[in-house]
Length: 271
Image (cartoon, rainbow, N blue to C red; front, side, top):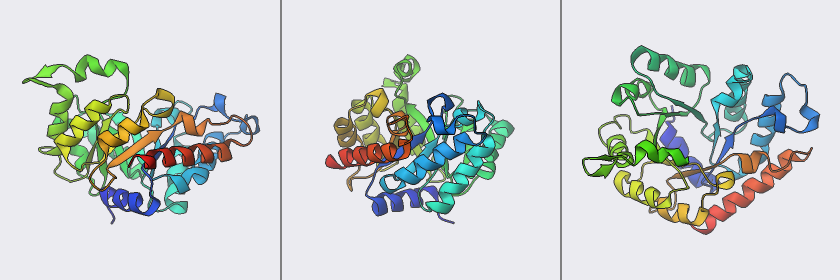
């Protein structure tokens, strides 16, 4: 079985892209042609995936956008479609789970056995007890929240612990004590390029999932220069709304492809 880190490394090289396309389907923003369809979420996301796959290294469906519409079955179908039609492009389930013991085991089964995700985002606030159950799934990626892109992230992530901001402690733990599987990564927001650079210095070549460009306004040049590894990879730079809602008309898929290509090319200018 190919592990998440192996698939991701191969995808970076094969596609020449660091772009991760986020899939946050909101039916009120869909084109009129999909209105009222019971499978509209799957159809919309499938079309976006097929259009943007040539320009992406990975996809990141956000589970809440499916669960809120009772569309978990459409999420299953979407991930299966990505694996079948675009093999080698990892799927990261953005779930931000954070619980301990048997509950975390069930969340891990949901992500990896039910949805067949290649990786998942998790919240480390409850410590290693909340990380360890995910590591039992060999080859699966576990991407730990570290320095998030939202303004309120600083409420906790910048608290000083032993003379360092808490997010740096999380980065150190994830890179060393917690990374028994070798499949951990970190979420670090593009809205904080200085912190991206600091995290990169702490964790070496560990993959960084970087949300916050596009609709959230993160600076692509600053992000790439702060987070790239020596070989110009190491990042999954996520854009969601700016790509999937590039058009609300019937040309939504083509508009998404154009936006994804432009974003990939902008990222590559600074690698």
